Image (cartoon, rainbow, N blue to C red; front, side, top):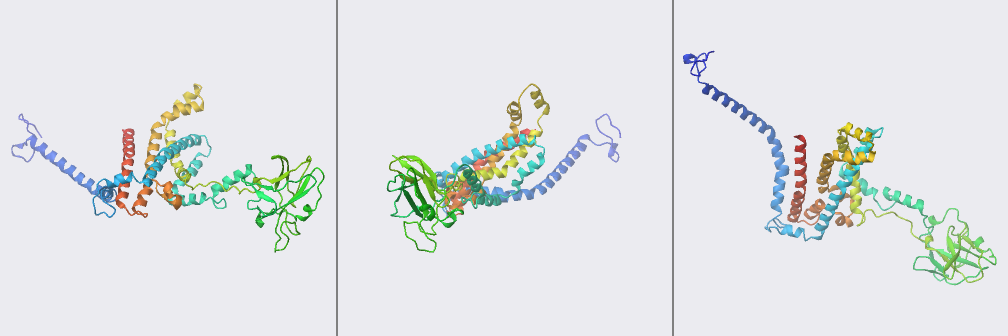
Length: 464
């Protein structure tokens, strides 16, 4: 192949042995264009199913919801922005917005903090992998199953709810429970109940006398196993400087006996606290024995009023009403923390493992304490990871539905409702107003979009 002086290239098989350069370049460009076109068509062919699926499952529902939000409940009459104005006038919706705000502020903050603390501590644990696996396991549990688990765990009855069982166990370890919560004095037998729940004798007693105090309403299972017959204690004589008596169950099993008198087969009530009051002040205290008898000793001459304090009759501590109106939202957030703490810990742990170790070691060699290293070096270096975790959790809590709907009982459903549950309740859960429900959905979308855009932009910056 040769080149002549006029800038043409000699090509075999052509007239004169040459072909213009422009003609050759044009054919090469056309070939490249055809190749690009073919590649573009192949790419479109591969992406098209995903685009169709995305359009059917995301784009179309969004556009339909936006359009539906401008119509009334029946979907036949155009109402403009009336649904949006109604949304902010509805007390239930305002409560849902308030609860969603609590979720957005509290849950991601606690999760990010817990994830950071656990990620740092796990590095110092010998079985770190097993510990991470244990904390991450709740992520494998669906929100439906987790909601059922915590609905049972939060039961108010300590015999059913494990949380209240633990709370009652701790409470009873530090404070004694009452012996006879259902006991009440028999009417007309000389005992009067005070406003604070205690019982006092109607008449005064002097040292050297015996006073018998009869009660009813005590369930058989409430009588201690070591209780004995009350009659022996009632027959004892008091010394000159003491008051004696017996606190007993004024009831004979099977019937019979005389009201107000200690009969054979009537049980004493042990572990009852009895006080002797002089001028309204307790000067002596005793606890009843197995047969219900008591002795108030070393009493000076005078007139004393016998009193049985309210501690003998208070209801046993039943724990906390976790699913009541006041605590239902914090209780559900606690269930959410149980599920997502492992997720935050693993992501932050991955960022922690990528930190430059020489920087941390240099700070320690310069005399920095572990707290100073954590606060001034570890946390600032982990700031991008912490931000991504926080924003991701914000997006997630805005959409929370399952836990709220399952854990919150029906009577307090409105107290725990968030935007997602309110949208469902208004549309399908009895409200049957899909226009207002669509407006709520659009509001939720508008709240989520900024966080999504922030996360995507931050991800792109980290990739560049």
